[in-house]
View 1 (cartoon, one colour):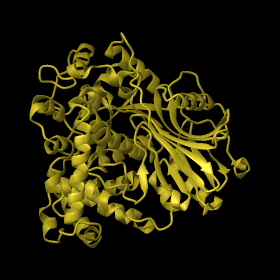
View 2: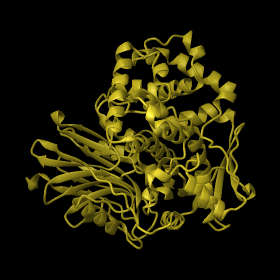
View 3: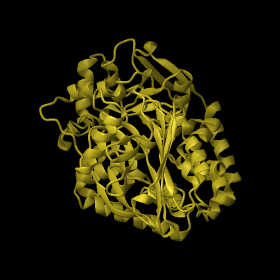
View 4: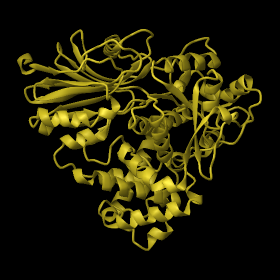
Length: 549
């Protein structure tokens, strides 16, 4: 058996942490084709790449040095393991091999250290390949597993997999889910058979002469609770580990509570950036200290096209536009690291839905509960074929019932993590890493995310109450304000809406073919803004990725 795993190692020695992963195992494996696919991840790690050929495939990695400069071959080999690693284990002073070893040994004991990471490692002794994605999903990992074809492949992004697959097909079920709810409901992608590894999931594959076979799937999550720690202290501790890098690092700041809390911990010389959106500015206090990145309606379509290409999916999130603009602005300024406030709303209950759910939890049915995340999915699914619409309803109903069976508060956490935080984190990763910029997320580390009991997250009719208290203490002039969502002002951008209707009209045949059978040239003119945006991203996705289909 072990003779099958004759290793051939290709490497460039360069220190790194934030990286990209690619693995492909198939009887159709071709090393030149694999190298070409690996190069498509160079924006995630332009400072070196390497891969190890293992039997009928290879495990590869590209590298972006962030926290250490000690030269190490990639993918690194530690103990009896060869690993492709993307991310960082927050252990002060450790280098790449130390972090990989720490993570692998922890996973073998069904625990995980603090950090953000996706990893794929080959266990030489047990002849196993393991995939794992961190429990919040800060670092992405896509995979395809077809045992009937002896195929296992995985990557930090979708595009390398498309370059390696034979004639992939569009997933109409996921089209229907995104059109109806804005997200994929079961961690699938728009490509049949290509899935997103769910946060906190460990998959173990055993190797035989017939290839890899899934042996077990486990969920490994730690709450990282630290007793007797004040939230204010934990924020500072987490921010310190997130900004521990030799790279130029900046803070993305808006007028909201999350980024402004982080702002109070940083000295005046720390760079801060704010996105100035035409017709919808959200400036922080003392904005004279903040560098501005401008985004106007004139930039809409070009920015959206680039964002969809980098996100590699259709979406309802208009924040794709803003993150693409931020990414370009930060990249042009020479940054490789940025601190963001993702996770605070989900973990401390900062959205309006949390307050409404809290006040009405005795009068909820499955449809009403799901609507808080998915909006009016009955209306959004209007143009779908009857079978796709019914299938989507059934999936939503099952997921909602399963979540609520675990209790009201647990159901909120499940939906928040799966249908709010995970897409937001994947958006941040893909759009920022398109310009080789790492997103750091202080609200998700050092036990901070689970530091506050659920029953006191809402106080006196205010969500994120403890965070507001901390901000008022640290910045007494701070004035509370209503929650502003990070969204493009589509209702005010008439030229953008005209451009979207044109894109959807030009893609009408395609949209009808993938399930929107009831969409016509006449109905396009009356589609609501939010739904029009979703269909536009689907149309652009086809333009960018249709060559693979």
